[in-house]
Length: 178
Image 1: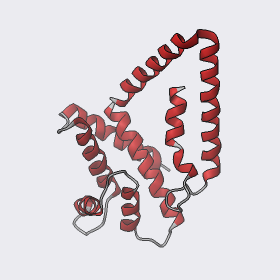
Image 2: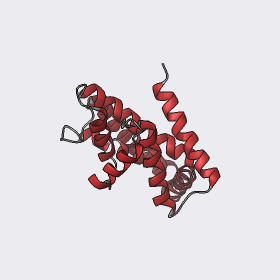
Image 3: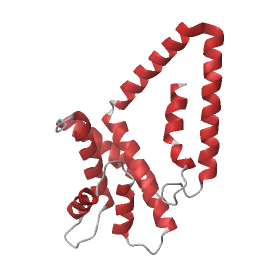
C-alpha cells in the first residue's frame, strides 16, 4: 500500500497540464498511475478485512522501515537519480532535435526541485571540458553528489563516494549501451 502511494506520487507529473511538465506520452504513465491507485484501494480493503486496524498499522510500519532502509543506500540513490535524468535528457533530445546540448541540459537540471538559474549555470560551467563542451556525466556527478551532501549535511566518506560513483556509472552504462 505504501508502495502504491509512492508510485502515485512519482507519477503525478503524468497529470500535468504544462508542455514541459507533462511527459511526451502520458497515456502509459496515467494507466500505471490508475493501476497504483486501484492497488492502494485493494490493499486497504484486504488489510481491514483480514486484520483490522492493528494489522493495517503494522503493515504501514513494515513498509516505512523497508522504504527507510532502501533510501539509505547511496548507490541506489545515485542510480535512480542518474537514470531519471538520463531518461529526461533523451526525451528532450528527441522532442527538440535542433536544440543544443547545453540548453537541453539546462532544462534537465531545471526539472530538479530547488535549482535556481545561478546554480544551474555554475554546474554547467564546472562540467565543461577544455574545449568548452558540456559533459553529461560530470553534470550528473555534480548534481547527485551535491544533493547527497545536502541530505546528509556534509561531505560523504570515501566509501560513500565510491558507492555514489558506482551508482552513476551503472545508470550511464545501462542507458547508453548499444
